[in-house]
Length: 325
Image (cartoon, rainbow, N blue to C red; front, side, top):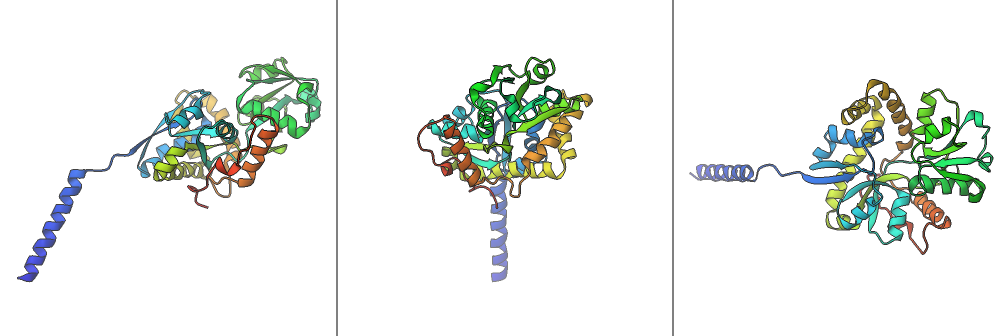
């Protein structure tokens, strides 16, 4: 009798639990907007991989990508308009110096992708050969301009000794049409284009002369304080995307083509070469990890360049709390 009663109670409890689960239904995924700060591009391949392979979904996330050439990206992040963004360490440093509560939570690029390019025929064989020459730059702000200033500082070239000209994003045409002698460019774009087109070039990569923290995943202090679990899940999926891209670039590139349908087979040859170059910038012993020495050097450099004043502790700009060593 007692055994029958016990079985009846267990059965009723099991049925009640199943009913409760059925009533509650599956939990809804957390909606997350990731601001990219640019147009759909092969350089976002790890994010596309994390989406298509289900890494974000496995973390209970539904991610929307917010594109746009925005100058106020970190301002939007600081005010909570978006909670996650891709941005560079120099921008985080300057934002924080201006009181914006934003924090770098996962490193992505291990090298700052700015360089100075000239055609081999120009005779510019060392950085010092740029003195007295015309150098084109897209704009006098942002990563390219900061990279240029850092390059001059590292190479020991006075700013006023170079004829710097704003040319917009026309680096390849301006260089090949001899409008300028050299250009400040994105290391993962114009040099690859020029080589693919058969030009012999000289390239001076910024990281050979100085150190700046580059692109990574950023959030705001409120999100870290109020929902650290959300930050952890976004970082985990993001890093998985980088890892999978490094492990199988061809499969990752196929995924990227789904996100950029206008990329035809001819353009794909160049873009696959761009991705190959990207891999050299993304590889790391510990993906996502922030190097404290790199942050300290970066803050010191930006301060020495006069881009901000006052004291700013490097350790307030980033955290490794969400990265598995």
